[in-house]
Length: 298
Image (cartoon, rainbow, N blue to C red; front, side, top):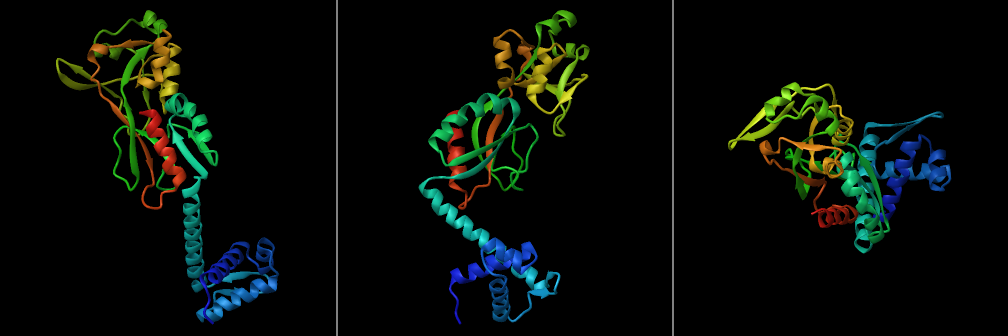
Protein backbone atom coordinates (compact mmCIF):
# COMPACT_ATOMS: atom_id res chain seq x y z
CA UNK A 1 0.00 0.00 0.00
CA UNK A 2 1.35 3.43 -0.97
CA UNK A 3 1.78 5.73 2.01
CA UNK A 4 1.64 9.51 1.95
CA UNK A 5 4.38 11.75 3.38
CA UNK A 6 2.46 12.59 6.54
CA UNK A 7 2.07 8.89 7.42
CA UNK A 8 5.77 8.24 6.91
CA UNK A 9 6.73 11.27 8.96
CA UNK A 10 4.52 9.99 11.79
CA UNK A 11 6.16 6.56 11.55
CA UNK A 12 9.60 8.16 11.74
CA UNK A 13 8.54 10.20 14.78
CA UNK A 14 7.38 7.01 16.52
CA UNK A 15 10.56 5.13 15.58
CA UNK A 16 12.78 7.94 16.88
CA UNK A 17 10.81 8.02 20.15
CA UNK A 18 11.29 4.26 20.59
CA UNK A 19 15.03 4.49 19.91
CA UNK A 20 15.40 7.40 22.33
CA UNK A 21 13.29 5.97 25.16
CA UNK A 22 14.37 2.35 24.79
CA UNK A 23 10.93 0.75 24.93
CA UNK A 24 7.54 0.66 23.25
CA UNK A 25 5.71 1.56 26.45
CA UNK A 26 7.91 4.58 27.18
CA UNK A 27 7.56 5.83 23.61
CA UNK A 28 3.80 5.31 23.86
CA UNK A 29 3.61 7.45 27.00
CA UNK A 30 5.54 10.23 25.25
CA UNK A 31 3.36 10.13 22.14
CA UNK A 32 0.02 9.29 23.72
CA UNK A 33 -0.18 5.84 22.08
CA UNK A 34 -0.58 2.33 23.39
CA UNK A 35 2.52 0.10 23.42
CA UNK A 36 0.82 -2.23 20.92
CA UNK A 37 0.22 0.68 18.50
CA UNK A 38 3.87 1.65 18.74
CA UNK A 39 4.98 -1.96 18.20
CA UNK A 40 2.72 -2.32 15.14
CA UNK A 41 4.20 0.85 13.64
CA UNK A 42 7.75 -0.50 13.96
CA UNK A 43 6.60 -3.84 12.51
CA UNK A 44 5.04 -1.99 9.58
CA UNK A 45 8.25 -0.07 8.83
CA UNK A 46 10.30 -3.27 8.94
CA UNK A 47 7.83 -5.12 6.68
CA UNK A 48 7.90 -2.32 4.12
CA UNK A 49 11.71 -2.09 4.12
CA UNK A 50 12.24 -5.85 4.31
CA UNK A 51 14.88 -5.58 7.05
CA UNK A 52 15.03 -5.91 10.81
CA UNK A 53 15.53 -2.50 12.46
CA UNK A 54 15.27 -3.53 16.11
CA UNK A 55 16.15 -6.65 18.07
CA UNK A 56 13.59 -7.21 20.84
CA UNK A 57 14.08 -9.02 24.10
CA UNK A 58 11.93 -8.95 27.21
CA UNK A 59 14.29 -6.40 28.76
CA UNK A 60 15.84 -4.28 26.03
CA UNK A 61 15.52 -3.05 22.46
CA UNK A 62 18.69 -2.91 20.38
CA UNK A 63 19.04 -1.20 17.02
CA UNK A 64 20.54 -3.20 14.19
CA UNK A 65 22.99 -1.60 11.76
CA UNK A 66 20.04 -0.95 9.43
CA UNK A 67 18.12 0.50 12.36
CA UNK A 68 20.94 2.92 13.10
CA UNK A 69 20.95 4.05 9.47
CA UNK A 70 17.17 4.51 9.47
CA UNK A 71 17.32 6.40 12.77
CA UNK A 72 19.86 8.86 11.41
CA UNK A 73 17.83 9.42 8.25
CA UNK A 74 14.60 9.84 10.23
CA UNK A 75 16.16 12.44 12.52
CA UNK A 76 17.49 14.44 9.55
CA UNK A 77 14.14 14.34 7.75
CA UNK A 78 12.19 15.38 10.85
CA UNK A 79 14.67 18.20 11.53
CA UNK A 80 14.30 19.39 7.92
CA UNK A 81 10.53 19.40 8.32
CA UNK A 82 10.80 21.45 11.52
CA UNK A 83 13.16 23.91 9.83
CA UNK A 84 10.87 24.25 6.81
CA UNK A 85 7.81 24.91 8.96
CA UNK A 86 9.73 27.34 11.16
CA UNK A 87 11.02 29.17 8.10
CA UNK A 88 7.49 29.59 6.75
CA UNK A 89 6.22 30.73 10.15
CA UNK A 90 9.13 33.17 10.47
CA UNK A 91 8.08 34.94 7.27
CA UNK A 92 5.01 36.20 9.04
CA UNK A 93 6.46 37.13 12.44
CA UNK A 94 10.04 36.12 13.31
CA UNK A 95 10.07 34.09 16.48
CA UNK A 96 12.29 31.83 18.52
CA UNK A 97 15.57 32.06 20.41
CA UNK A 98 18.64 33.95 19.12
CA UNK A 99 21.85 33.07 20.99
CA UNK A 100 24.25 36.01 20.91
CA UNK A 101 27.91 36.10 21.94
CA UNK A 102 29.54 39.51 22.52
CA UNK A 103 32.64 40.75 24.31
CA UNK A 104 32.29 41.96 27.88
CA UNK A 105 32.99 45.66 27.36
CA UNK A 106 31.51 46.16 23.91
CA UNK A 107 28.51 44.01 24.75
CA UNK A 108 27.81 45.81 28.01
CA UNK A 109 28.28 49.29 26.60
CA UNK A 110 26.91 49.00 23.06
CA UNK A 111 24.86 45.83 22.53
CA UNK A 112 22.92 45.37 25.77
CA UNK A 113 21.50 48.95 25.69
CA UNK A 114 19.91 48.15 22.30
CA UNK A 115 18.14 44.96 23.34
CA UNK A 116 15.11 46.66 24.85
CA UNK A 117 14.34 48.36 21.53
CA UNK A 118 14.86 45.09 19.67
CA UNK A 119 12.47 43.00 21.75
CA UNK A 120 9.86 45.74 21.56
CA UNK A 121 10.17 45.60 17.77
CA UNK A 122 10.19 41.78 17.70
CA UNK A 123 8.23 40.58 20.75
CA UNK A 124 8.23 36.91 19.65
CA UNK A 125 12.04 36.65 19.64
CA UNK A 126 13.93 35.63 22.78
CA UNK A 127 17.47 37.02 22.99
CA UNK A 128 19.88 34.71 24.86
CA UNK A 129 23.04 36.81 25.28
CA UNK A 130 26.40 35.65 26.63
CA UNK A 131 29.04 38.30 27.36
CA UNK A 132 32.53 36.82 27.12
CA UNK A 133 35.79 37.58 25.34
CA UNK A 134 36.27 33.84 24.74
CA UNK A 135 35.76 33.07 21.03
CA UNK A 136 32.79 30.72 20.66
CA UNK A 137 32.38 28.33 17.73
CA UNK A 138 29.39 29.59 15.78
CA UNK A 139 29.80 26.94 13.06
CA UNK A 140 29.51 24.23 15.73
CA UNK A 141 26.26 25.72 17.04
CA UNK A 142 27.57 27.42 20.20
CA UNK A 143 25.87 30.68 19.18
CA UNK A 144 23.65 31.99 16.41
CA UNK A 145 25.41 35.36 16.16
CA UNK A 146 28.83 36.37 17.49
CA UNK A 147 30.38 39.84 17.41
CA UNK A 148 34.05 39.62 16.47
CA UNK A 149 36.89 42.14 16.45
CA UNK A 150 39.84 42.18 14.08
CA UNK A 151 40.52 40.31 10.83
CA UNK A 152 38.38 37.25 10.30
CA UNK A 153 39.83 33.82 9.57
CA UNK A 154 38.59 31.89 6.56
CA UNK A 155 35.45 29.98 7.54
CA UNK A 156 32.07 28.92 6.16
CA UNK A 157 30.39 31.65 8.23
CA UNK A 158 28.80 34.80 6.84
CA UNK A 159 30.05 38.16 8.18
CA UNK A 160 28.30 41.55 8.32
CA UNK A 161 30.44 44.57 9.12
CA UNK A 162 29.13 46.65 12.02
CA UNK A 163 31.89 49.27 12.28
CA UNK A 164 35.43 49.53 13.58
CA UNK A 165 37.38 50.74 16.60
CA UNK A 166 40.85 51.96 17.50
CA UNK A 167 43.05 51.28 20.54
CA UNK A 168 44.52 53.59 23.13
CA UNK A 169 47.33 53.20 25.70
CA UNK A 170 46.17 54.39 29.11
CA UNK A 171 47.14 54.53 32.77
CA UNK A 172 45.63 56.09 35.86
CA UNK A 173 46.81 59.46 37.25
CA UNK A 174 47.81 57.66 40.47
CA UNK A 175 50.01 55.18 38.60
CA UNK A 176 51.68 57.94 36.60
CA UNK A 177 52.34 59.94 39.78
CA UNK A 178 54.13 56.93 41.26
CA UNK A 179 55.95 55.62 38.21
CA UNK A 180 56.30 58.59 35.90
CA UNK A 181 54.75 59.29 32.50
CA UNK A 182 56.31 57.57 29.47
CA UNK A 183 57.20 60.07 26.76
CA UNK A 184 58.48 57.62 24.11
CA UNK A 185 57.41 53.99 23.53
CA UNK A 186 60.74 52.62 24.80
CA UNK A 187 59.95 54.05 28.25
CA UNK A 188 57.40 51.24 28.59
CA UNK A 189 60.26 48.82 29.32
CA UNK A 190 60.32 50.42 32.79
CA UNK A 191 56.56 50.10 33.33
CA UNK A 192 54.08 47.36 34.25
CA UNK A 193 52.18 46.67 31.03
CA UNK A 194 48.89 44.79 31.26
CA UNK A 195 48.17 42.66 28.21
CA UNK A 196 45.72 40.15 26.75
CA UNK A 197 46.31 36.43 27.25
CA UNK A 198 44.69 35.18 24.03
CA UNK A 199 46.69 32.61 22.14
CA UNK A 200 46.54 34.87 19.10
CA UNK A 201 47.77 37.87 21.13
CA UNK A 202 51.49 38.59 21.21
CA UNK A 203 53.14 40.70 23.95
CA UNK A 204 53.88 43.50 21.47
CA UNK A 205 52.26 46.91 20.98
CA UNK A 206 52.42 48.73 17.62
CA UNK A 207 53.78 52.26 17.24
CA UNK A 208 54.58 54.73 14.48
CA UNK A 209 57.60 57.04 14.52
CA UNK A 210 58.62 59.31 11.66
CA UNK A 211 56.18 57.54 9.35
CA UNK A 212 57.57 54.07 10.15
CA UNK A 213 55.52 51.39 11.90
CA UNK A 214 57.21 49.10 14.39
CA UNK A 215 56.31 46.81 17.30
CA UNK A 216 57.60 46.96 20.85
CA UNK A 217 57.66 43.97 23.20
CA UNK A 218 56.07 44.77 26.56
CA UNK A 219 55.96 42.90 29.86
CA UNK A 220 53.86 43.12 32.98
CA UNK A 221 52.51 41.32 36.05
CA UNK A 222 48.98 40.51 34.85
CA UNK A 223 47.33 39.26 31.67
CA UNK A 224 43.58 38.91 31.12
CA UNK A 225 41.17 37.59 28.52
CA UNK A 226 39.05 40.74 28.19
CA UNK A 227 39.46 44.48 27.83
CA UNK A 228 37.09 45.31 30.68
CA UNK A 229 39.33 43.55 33.21
CA UNK A 230 42.43 45.29 31.85
CA UNK A 231 40.63 48.63 32.03
CA UNK A 232 39.59 47.97 35.63
CA UNK A 233 43.17 47.10 36.57
CA UNK A 234 44.48 50.24 34.90
CA UNK A 235 41.93 52.41 36.73
CA UNK A 236 43.09 50.77 39.99
CA UNK A 237 46.67 51.90 39.27
CA UNK A 238 48.08 48.43 38.63
CA UNK A 239 49.73 49.32 35.33
CA UNK A 240 49.55 50.56 31.75
CA UNK A 241 47.31 48.87 29.18
CA UNK A 242 46.34 49.13 25.52
CA UNK A 243 42.69 48.29 24.82
CA UNK A 244 39.83 49.21 22.53
CA UNK A 245 38.59 52.78 22.67
CA UNK A 246 35.09 51.63 23.67
CA UNK A 247 36.56 50.04 26.82
CA UNK A 248 38.23 53.22 28.12
CA UNK A 249 36.17 56.10 26.70
CA UNK A 250 34.09 56.60 29.85
CA UNK A 251 37.10 56.38 32.19
CA UNK A 252 39.06 58.88 30.10
CA UNK A 253 36.11 61.31 30.08
CA UNK A 254 35.85 60.96 33.87
CA UNK A 255 39.60 61.54 34.38
CA UNK A 256 40.16 58.07 35.82
CA UNK A 257 42.51 57.19 32.95
CA UNK A 258 44.96 59.25 30.90
CA UNK A 259 45.82 58.54 27.23
CA UNK A 260 49.54 57.97 26.69
CA UNK A 261 51.95 58.16 23.74
CA UNK A 262 49.28 59.46 21.37
CA UNK A 263 51.97 61.02 19.12
CA UNK A 264 53.13 57.44 18.44
CA UNK A 265 49.68 55.88 17.98
CA UNK A 266 49.74 54.07 14.60
CA UNK A 267 46.03 54.68 14.16
CA UNK A 268 45.33 51.00 13.56
CA UNK A 269 41.66 50.14 13.37
CA UNK A 270 39.95 46.85 14.18
CA UNK A 271 36.88 45.96 12.11
CA UNK A 272 33.81 44.79 14.04
CA UNK A 273 31.69 42.06 12.42
CA UNK A 274 28.65 40.02 13.25
CA UNK A 275 29.31 36.43 12.15
CA UNK A 276 26.61 33.82 11.66
CA UNK A 277 25.58 30.85 9.56
CA UNK A 278 24.07 32.42 6.45
CA UNK A 279 22.62 30.97 3.29
CA UNK A 280 19.14 30.35 1.98
CA UNK A 281 18.02 28.60 5.18
CA UNK A 282 19.09 31.40 7.51
CA UNK A 283 16.25 31.82 10.06
CA UNK A 284 14.40 35.12 9.88
CA UNK A 285 14.98 35.67 13.60
CA UNK A 286 18.74 35.71 13.03
CA UNK A 287 18.48 37.86 9.90
CA UNK A 288 16.41 40.58 11.58
CA UNK A 289 18.75 40.65 14.59
CA UNK A 290 21.82 41.11 12.40
CA UNK A 291 20.00 43.78 10.38
CA UNK A 292 19.11 45.55 13.63
CA UNK A 293 22.73 45.53 14.83
CA UNK A 294 23.95 46.87 11.51
CA UNK A 295 21.32 49.61 11.61
CA UNK A 296 22.03 50.74 15.17
CA UNK A 297 25.77 50.17 15.62
CA UNK A 298 27.00 51.87 12.46
